[in-house]
Length: 313
Image (cartoon, rainbow, N blue to C red):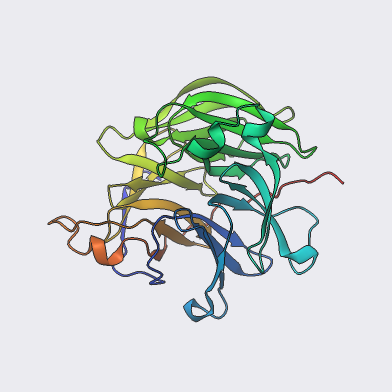
């Protein structure tokens, strides 16, 4: 991993014309790829065997930031149910129709109903014990984000726990290969943080900076590969960067649009979501044309498998 690697993507894989594409997820069992448009309240599902022409668009009744599969739930049964972090909390979604039903509204549980309008959930991930972590933030449709964000954890017993406060835009959550460190991005700070992680209890402690972007761009969502490297989307920077377990920059994927939101692995290919951009310039002359599209590039390494939410019966 000593050599700095570079990749370039020139055209989108799917010309979907989204506003804020996020939450890329590969369902290996079904060979399906899904992603969301947070701003437009849409869930997209793609049959990878059939390609771009199979893309299905589902309208949901709320914005969705991230999705996860449920352990021991057959995707072809139980209405094809998945679990998501949505506008007000955690919910089940019918992957065939887009119907959404809340199972845990964070601000009702927190007894802060006035936050239901001005907050929304963003990125998240499921840990090795089937706990679903997701961060909330101020909804930009309502107000400019400030450090009112909260990192929540939904446990298999459906109890909701507040794990971290005073975050601005929580993004990219994941774990190292040893499963003793959790990473969390707070985008406006330019930093990816690391925490000591206790897998058995789900406790986190000892917050510290793992990587500081050091420029006026924002690290967004990320994926982690089988070597423990973080692939972080740089919103406003037109790239995905690869960060070693030691916190060193060791690779870069360049894209033809500015607002990169999140990558996800499909085999050795990196699928990358983006957001709409309203301005071209010399650095990104085609950013308006390509913003809000889905891209992919083969980077020659596989990603860590995704964990499933363990819903207790």
